[in-house]
Image (tube, rainbow, N blue to C red; front, top):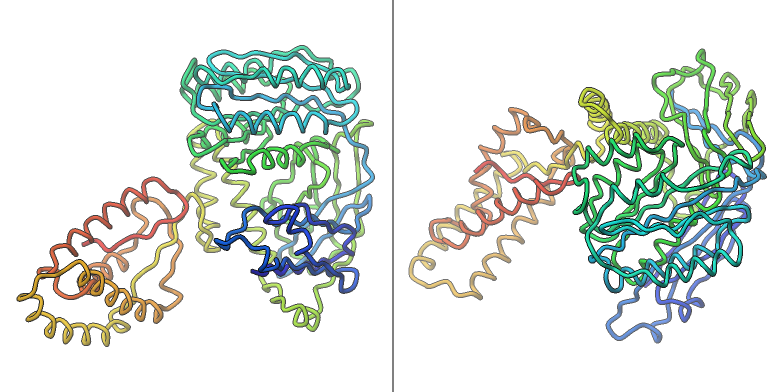
Length: 546
């Protein structure tokens, strides 16, 4: 096994470190890293075969952290074919002390390894708070219980660890009451200027006690969150109600993430906290000169939080072909009050040299990369608006805009599906002629001989091989991204499906009349496809109508 990582940046790379390697500490020596100039870093993970487990499986992640040389400036801007992208990530800003609430589900379903991992992560996070932070721990099951707001000190951490060690899993899941408790806590957040309130909520299930309807929970959160706390939601395992968690987060200046039940779940929790650990700016707003930028084309220009180690990105459309005409103002709230940066000049960003890319075995950046980046961020913003929508009109409007951009740029989203269309009759003509001859040859044998299990497998294997040869002749245009609406398919596709449906059956090894098991298999596949397509929003493969 070999993992080869190449990083090429527009600024000099200042930091490169390997945080995790598959296999753990004993495989650290399998990593080699080197630099090729200031802007390029190379890294290889090449484990010794002698150290490989007998089954050949190495568990874990390869995690590489890097950063580039930054300054207290407005960042970089690039323009290409009528689109621009602005990257903003200043340094040398003082961190802002925060109040953080850990809202932990301790219902019966958290019993065992899950709660053990959560406790381990919390104990580690407590030692990683910043000077001046305040914190609280609330756990909820059928009811909620608080540690109480504490300033970060050694004594407070020891008391909090005792509270964590006392947690036990019992009862149901009262999400509404847990959130209520997180808004009703004593604090002196306003005593030292700006102090953001960050709530990290972790749950592994759905609301089973108290208010259970999602709309009621969302309404209660909106009414109670007077101080505009940012809520970040973690869904632990496959039973978590991610739809509700995403809506809570997006309506309250946060985000949601799934934590997978695995050996490194505690590391996933620690990593998520690390991203939020050091807020630098609040309520960051970008504004651009309207004579240079199409204002209605801009992706999100308002960011409630800017954390250390992250980057804010704004894209939009412009009629300019150079940087000099774009002027911007960036405002926000920092530790010492109001933050303002007026920008009239930009860093020049040159595209990577083609000879260097060839030397590094890297593909050149696609010509329409910035346009696709714009489309990606616009769709992402609009889907967040859908989750945060308070009414059907607002939700439908955002969905329509997102669907239009997704279809124009061929993005698979929760509103679209990837559909593989069978080749047209012309492509299948030679195959069908061959198939008819094979059917005639097989009919006599199949009418006289019972089909054994081995024969079934052989026939299926042969038919799949034949299908594969047809698949290889597919025109790329036969892979389409379509809307998930019921009337998504066009008349052409319906007609084509009807014309080709007999091909789909015959490809499974001759006349279905002579293969009752094949008919049953096809029906089973269609039923499974129906179930699958009703349960997933990201990817659907539609079988022909018959």
